[in-house]
Length: 257
DNA sequence: AGAACCGCCTGCTTGC
DNA sequence: TGCAAGCAGGCGGTTC
Image 1 (cartoon, rainbow, N blue to C red):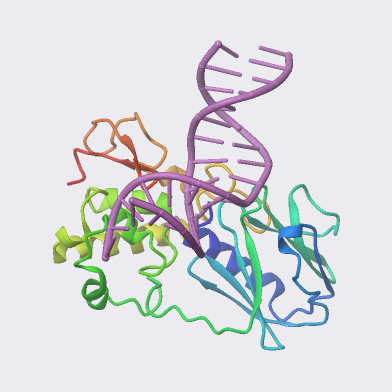
Image 2 (tube, chains in turn purple, yellow, cyan):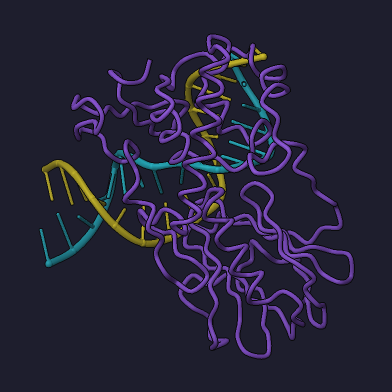
């Protein structure tokens, strides 16, 4: 599922491919996306990531805001022919960008709203002190908190599990029980893990592919996610899978306190 | 405030 | 082999 590194990968590829280009036409294939107007003759100014959202800024002041949710992909294809599960298309003189989304959870919005990251993006103006001030006394479980897009943007289930493993924090801990060193560890490892994942062009466990249909390489870096029943790479005990808020959570009960 | 659950979806895995 | 049930989960919503 596309989280920050996957969306960042797409954003960079789109920036290189379609920034400054004129849209010749666009087409909707899915009733759920009905109402998206034809984007014909707009020129793309730039492409930005906000959390897990891709924003395609246009010269008319609007921006196309794409959220891929679970199984959404953006795919560059020279042929305008609809690929399997193609939901929406924008066309250029030399090819097309398709939203491909088997489960149809993805959303596309045309909006004039200027979104800011408000310090929620770890690679933006994020400030640990104000984060702890705002969220450090919450009773909510730490894993739920770091997946809360209002608190920090871009972290989903896979990277949340990996971050807490590297930080050696039990995902079931209440946020309010963490000390300053533990908070520091979480965000240090969050930056490290996400940076490596961006370098690896994302985690391709099942669905994720980049703009050109290529798998990422970060799945080989995962230490706990999807590793239920296997041995912890650090201590050799079993990695456990539990359900937390309806989501699969993987961790090492021996290493994560 | 926070946790639990639902609905949105469909491809894949599992079990008989 | 085939078919049905179960599962996966980001996010917005509701309920307790």
